[in-house]
Image (cartoon, rainbow, N blue to C red; front, side, top):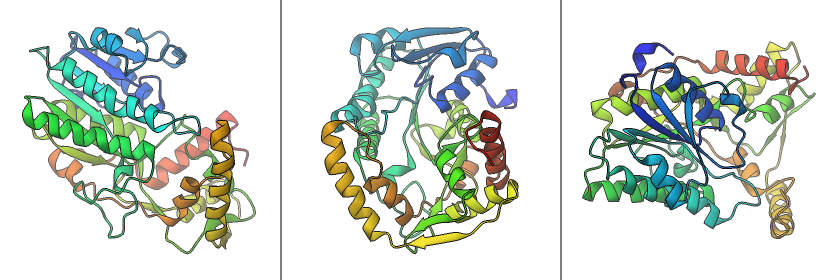
Length: 340
């Protein structure tokens, strides 16, 4: 990141929630490097080792704990709220609500107590829009959340906008596309599949996917924190264009010199299998080997218009899809996560 992207003065107190996640680690490193007085909130079970050696004040506890939030937010001039609930079989609707909605309410009410507070950066998800029937989707595209994670992300956004309409709250909402980059495991399974004799696709859809490199995403957070035109606005953060899942597989296979053949199967039986697995596994707190959301991945298109990010914030993505995918695939191979 070029240093001039961060317009927050050195020494300014800032708080990051979700700092030990993939995106949080990247943002924290950038803000520490910019000379800010960085505080981070992490669960007591979180691994802090990726941020060892950095000048950080740590607050430990749940992001929906009123006492912890009051202590962590006090005196901060910027808050980057990245914390998100784990998306697994053990997470309930209440878990999602606590981490996404209750935490937002607690943080926002605390920041209003500080007359020096500058801006609250709220991280949501493009998942609030669901399947994009008429691409590309802008920030105003209809909402269609498909699960508890997305529903509570949307509820947090709507509460925030409603609250801000009645209170003098400096804030910006960012909806990231699918976050990826070296060090993250989001695309490991997909890349592994690209190196098999056949690349499996379910159904007949285009299966468009919209990525955002973690470097571009965190740069968007930083620019939005001080840009005057970002006040009260929502921005989709993503690469310049979407990419078909099959094209991702082709890029990975070609990079490692492997043949690439697509095998398409009917999607209906997989939806049925997912429903059965979820019905059996979820009551037992077991992660299903297959579930509806993963199958639905192949039936939905994610195709977004990022022109508002470019035109209003003045930020253009620095990572093209092809180069970012190759960079990430190479890092997977170096870590032993991918064996070409």
